[in-house]
Length: 322
Image (cartoon, rainbow, N blue to C red; front, side):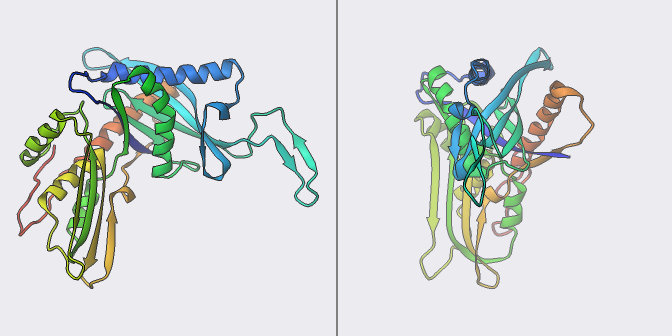
């Protein structure tokens, strides 16, 4: 079974009079990426020339971008299918003992090559990528995505900001909050506000704050709480819990706490990415596979907003974010 991870790609207006890019904007972003790939292949340009450098002398580059249409509820829709390559660029091989050249290529050759399939849904602006051998870790992968897409985003959408976050599981928050603890030492969280998604599924306590931040074009909401050095917080502030519920799709959160034995522990939301499986043999061809993965994307988004029960003196602060 193929397993996929998910990334929320947002183009956020930076001025109050700037409109959303909408699904057509996201389609154009990936069309531009596809044109770059096609041009490189047509002109036989080395793939490393359009790649971003990674650790270990590896590169990360778009390799294939294809647009498919499929039947929506009211009109046809578009899905983007393709792949990224992670590879090294080795043009010469030498004998380990003597150092003599054993092989010299004409260029554009690799000793390590990982083909990473992806599907991008422009309507939810979420990208699913195959979680397989060679996939970079969260931070370097987000950085690679940003570097690759930023060039086209700046050219096409000069008044928008590109933001990318990994989708994480809301169930991990419930499990963490339900753990027995002596108390909390610190909380750090960040949410990048989506100006295209309505937060009408968030609890009422957030709506006024969310509206104010959007109206004032605040791009990121950061919270930071710490206990006294020789003490602990008896509970997390409600704003921190609200932020955690939103950070599963729009940010990240980290909490340091003392467990019931008094041992310091840490909860990191990024350790709980949403993963979904695509059963083998259920699709025929890349178009059908893309449509099936759109279904996985919808499931992944639901997992970021699953029902969360957090106890504060046995009182729920969030009932249902659906």
